[in-house]
Image 1 (cartoon, rainbow, N blue to C red):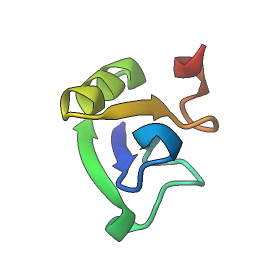
Image 2: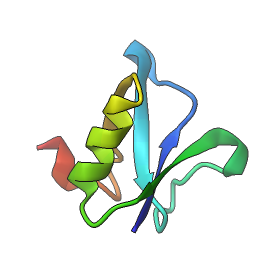
Image 3: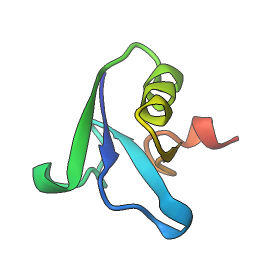
Image 4: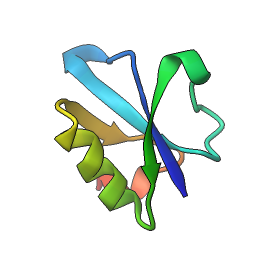
Length: 66
C-alpha cells in the first residue's frame, strides 16, 4: 500500500502519515509520497528517517499509536 505524510506539521512539529485509502489524505499539494510499503510500521519508520517527527493517522493507521 502507498503511504503519504502531511506536509503541514501539527503542534509540536509532528507530521501525520496516511495510507492511500484514507478519507483524510491531504490533496497532492499538501502531502509527500513515502512510497509503497507492506506494513505501516515500515512506512512510519521511513517517514521518521526523512528527518522529522511523524505519527500515524488516527483513522487509517491507528494501530501505530498504541
